[in-house]
Length: 328
Length: 254
Ligand SMILES: Nc1ncnc2c1ncn2[C@@H]1O[C@H](COP(=O)(O)OP(=O)(O)O)[C@@H](O)[C@H]1O
Ligand SMILES: [Mg+2]
Image (cartoon, rainbow over all chains, first blue to last red; front, side, top):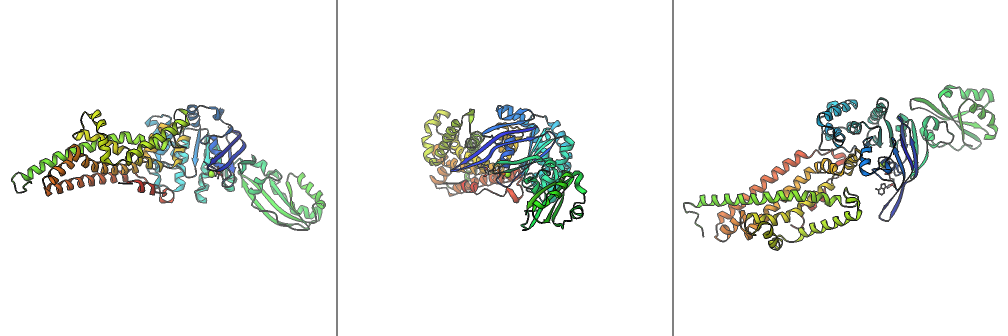
């Protein structure tokens, strides 16, 4: 649904040159929620703004729902943008318009007539749970309510894609969850494809089907989350399970075992102790609900060096577990 | 010398003030209208043609944008830096060309509009610059044209400071209208000079001051009211990057 190919963007302001995006490619499948995570300054905003060409890349192509946006004339681009709704970290609502007026903005722009506009706005406000606030001004709303208005505005024109630039970063954790749940609901009920960027792993964990990690303007890895967590060495998976960096334990072998799907409830430790007579210490464990599925990672220390544990590790891997040797 | 104890003094004063006030309101009203019609788009263009602005490349040419911006900046600065009394005299040939004469209230409208347009354009510029660029992006993301961004986002969102700017503009037009009156004839300024100064009638002078003060007060009050009505300020949390620029530049050099 969204295809970003070899996009680069460099900012020059004054004497400084910032390579905000460097040969970035991204594929977002229809109907999925795709999260791009990265630290502040990594290029996330530049990337998402390149998708609807608020920021025109220096090179590369952007295709959304079959339209190659980077090749369109200004007028054709404006039409194509109707298929792409966007929500912003600071909501960007018009202070002089009521909630309903804000939601109608996009409809006015595309020339929907008054009565129909009103009906559509109220309908969409109901979907986001704000129908009782139609006549209020943004200054009278809480942050979460403002973002609901932002979402309603983005959805009013029936887009196929929703872009979200840190939509929850200005909100408290509870409001964040309710907004994420709303995004999830829109995604399932309306079949909308969502590309969101965030610097919070919790956001990815809660709603995303796929994720990409961006650093210094480059995509480090990307993929479906169920696959990432069973990929050895995945940085995203490492971030998803809050185990931290492995401790240094001279003389021991530290391994991370990741369970997902079927292997989630096998009695690993008992098995290692019984079958191989190993004296296992548990260094840490995390069970996470990722995209609605349970997945867990356990960090164990086995006495002795890795060479001595080839047999038990191979055994665990045979049972479908991801085993990574993270320290020795 | 006018004798305040003469039987028709007060009715004469009233008559003279009525005519003077009418002429002043006419001069100020028409020049204000012209000021809005020209100054508003001028102010929008001043912001828009800046680099990164909405009209930075009109007709697809970045160069054209830069040139237009330079020219407008120059014209506005020129208009604002020439003292009014000199501007008024320098404009006489132009006024004659437009109105046919340079005497009387109608002729006064020309220099009044000329001095007020750059003044108001600057205030429009400042007001529009205060509009969060995020709002422009939001409208762009919805597929808005440049004209729609101006009419649906920039102008409505900047309405409140623009009204306040307009009220400051009106006040200075009234000021200048008194000055223009003394030279070209007409309005309350003319009354003050002819009766108050030339014929030593302090009562006339005081009456003119009171009427002008009253007009300014009423207009300012109205503007403040309207500005409040259109200001739906966000909560102080984030939109409170208020406008020292606006306050600082409201009356530079005057
Ligand atoms: N308009 C701009 N002009 C100059 N530099 C910019 C501009 N926009 C972004 N940058 C720079 O590009 C880099 C990436 O910015 P951004 O995409 O906003 O990062 P993120 O959203 O991940 O925090 C940063 O170093 C930032 O300073
Ligand atoms: Mg950002």
